[in-house]
Length: 51
Image (cartoon, one colour):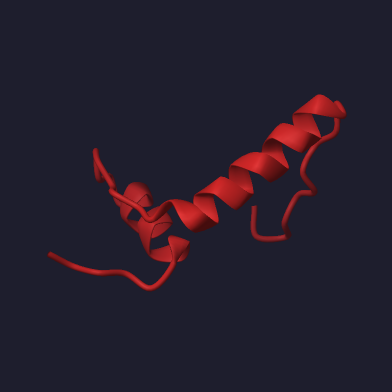
């Protein structure tokens, strides 16, 4: 089993076409709370220059 250091690794395997990725919840919980707060306030996340 491979162990990854952060959510960037999980995102890269999703982009490579993985169907299932198991992740540690800590970083994803923070992102989910932030996105929920944005939705509640009817705001949008800032766009990144890389998008």
